[in-house]
Image (cartoon, rainbow, N blue to C red; front, side, top):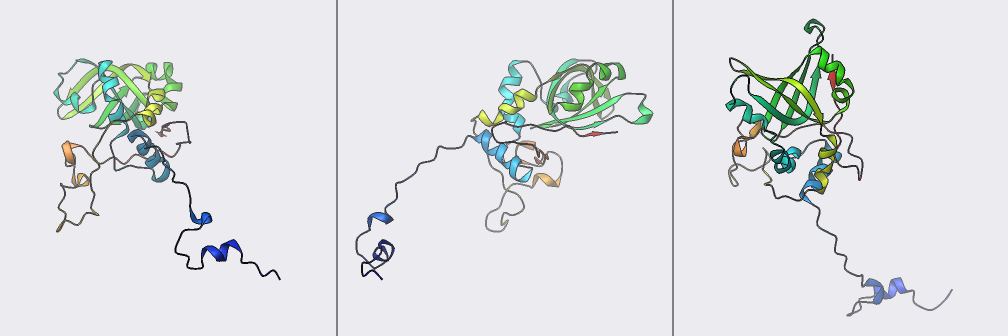
Length: 224
């Protein structure tokens, strides 16, 4: 057995000065972009308490004259419009004679789209695969119900995948885990529509397919 002291024990021998083997170089990691943090939230837990993904694209969509879902409330019946959002649900009931109903969502709320049978057949591949779409159509108002009757659909999945490259500030709101007695927060958005900060509903979209480096990809759920 050797009588020399091993480096490991020498370092832990109560020396007053740090030994070379204990000195590690400092590592500075680059700051993650806000959009990347949202993507990582969806990749890990399937939802986010940060900003809605479409919020990072709003300036780009506005430049293309695409309105937000909440803007439909102020538009007259028959008005031509382009509305965009993440595809939440696609339904084609057997009693609807081939008509497709699509629900999309952005950072302001949801919009209901009506796609006639002939237009569905022309854009079948897009409807069944796109994670985000732009609907070119006309506003249809029936009492409190508002729909957009689609004339044309445009796929925006590639734009959605660019969210992880966006770096725009957004607030992080607190949920029910906040201690209301010592740290009062705003009314919880899950208490009802428009109850969150800025009148926004809670963001809870299940997006399981977020492969590293691929950005944000949303699978369409087609319920028939």
